[in-house]
Length: 174
Image (cartoon, rainbow, N blue to C red; front, side):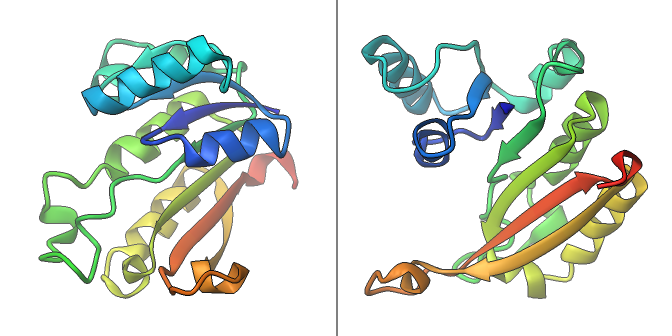
């Protein structure tokens, strides 16, 4: 499977997809300068796939790079920023300037991957915004399944519940 990594961050998901699943990353989109340098270093070290590193997802879309990924990737992955939905924050949701869901769904609509594998805080389910996400996926012709899992579900001593969403193109008959 070829994939595009949105909001790559510290590459935890990418390491799992590449080393455990054998997926091939075709591009990383990460706005944080420190994380960009880390991605570049891990590419040079041979720990992760070499692929272009893009900065802001909005520029990635606006400058036409997203369109170049049509037909190139099977899956778009990403943990779009959780601060707007976290119970630890102000829970400003769609009114928070860090809400990157609109850019995430726009990238999915442009690229049209078979799958989108997304992650966020479990607070998104009770934020009042989750219906918008499901509606946007539906309008983009994706069906979705989701589950909340935490670190404690795999034996860690802390909870840290996360929402995992697997969206799949309904037009593919999957």
